[in-house]
Amino acid sequence: MDVFDPQWLIYLGAALLLIAYGIRDELKLRVLIVVSTFVYIAYYWSLPTGPLWDPIITSFLFVAINFWVLGQIALERTTLSLSEDEKRLFDAFETLTPGQFRRVLKIAQWRRADDPDGTLLTRDDEPSNALFYVFEGIISVEKHGRRFRLPEDNFVGEVGYVLNRKTTTTSVAPEGVRYVEWDADALRMLSRKYPNLGNALNALLTRDLAKKLNTSFRPDDAMPSTEESLELLEAVEG
Image (cartoon, helix red, strand yellow):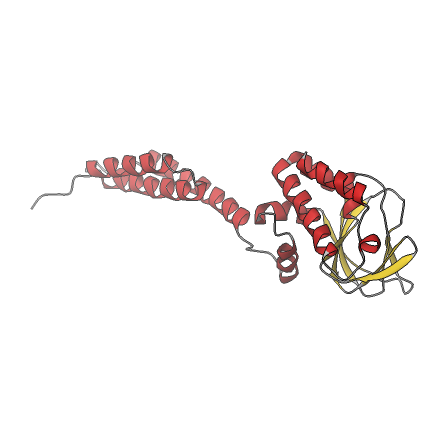
C-alpha cells in the first residue's frame, strides 16, 4: 500500500492561493487564504522528518491576522453587535452600508427631551450646528408662521446641513421625545474622510426631503423653497 506523499499538499495549497488571488470579493479571498494556510500547516506537520515548527507557528500567525480581518469585514457587511435601537436606526439609513453606518453611529448622541416647555432643536434663520433624527415621538415645526407636527422617523435640519447654511424652520421636541443628534462639523469631516459615505448620506437626506413632499404637509410649510431644492440637488450631484 502506497504511503501518502505530503508533497501533494503543497500543490493543493498553491492551487487554493491561485484561486483566491483571482477572486475580487475580499471575504471569499480571505477564506480561501485561510484554508490554503491550513493545508500548508498540514504539510509542515506531516513531513517524514518531523514537524517544521517555525513555518507552522508563522502560518498560525497569518491565520490569526486573516481571522481578525474577516471579523472586520463581517462588521462592515452585517448588523452584528448592534442593539435593537441601533438596528432600527440603521433601517432609516438605507443608503449606507453597515460599515458606513457604524462610523456615523460613533459620533451620534442619543438624547431624550426633558424640558417641560420643549427642547429647541433648530431655530429659523440661524446657523446649522447639528443634524437630528426623530427616533420616538412627534415634534413641533414652525415655518413662516405656520406650525405642523413632524412624526418620528424623520430628519430635522437636513437642508441646513447639506447646504451648509442657516436653517429654514424652528423645531421643538416636547418632553419625552427621543431623538439622535450629530454635530454638523463632525459629520461633514467624516463625509470628507469617506467620500462614498458622504455621497450616500447626502442621497439619504434628499430622499427624506422627497418623502416629506409626499406627506399631507403643505410644501411651503415643510419644505425648502424651489431655489433651495435646486441648490440641494446641485450639492448632491456635485
